[in-house]
Image (cartoon, rainbow, N blue to C red):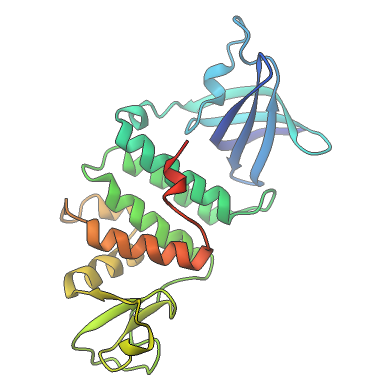
Length: 240
């Protein structure tokens, strides 16, 4: 048995009449599939311990293909995460992305702490989209896909007057090399600084930085980079 396993519920799906199948991101074992029998019964008292985004401590019995829930303790319900529909959509997209890029059963200590920080920070941020975009970039960086920002990804030029961001090259292109990727997107100095800040600041530090409500353009660039890098469609991740 695995005892006192700290984790965060990523997804909770109903199973038959009274059970649930969970995806739990654990601190020590990575993402695990967990069968929770009987949690929907009237007197079980366990339903709240299987809700998405809840911090929990589980006792788990290993099975052939998944683990079986034996006991659960709530560490935090994270109720502020449910304060708005728009915030829930951001959480849903971030969580689906994480489940897509991480294999099950492999420890991911740094990404566990990053996701935990994300949930804590995003619930108090006035503009949670900025935390979401930073989270995407920091997950990509941890997995070895940091966008190249210090020089042109094609020629190495550091003295760039007008830059674009290339999904194909995974970073910026200078004015001479931009013709190599006709689909690269114009990148302003302000957008460059925003992306750089997202990568080089902790999520907690971003909450005390200058708040910018209009992040549509830089958000589009980041999402396109993530989609190209991991071959996913983030629009589908907004659908439950």
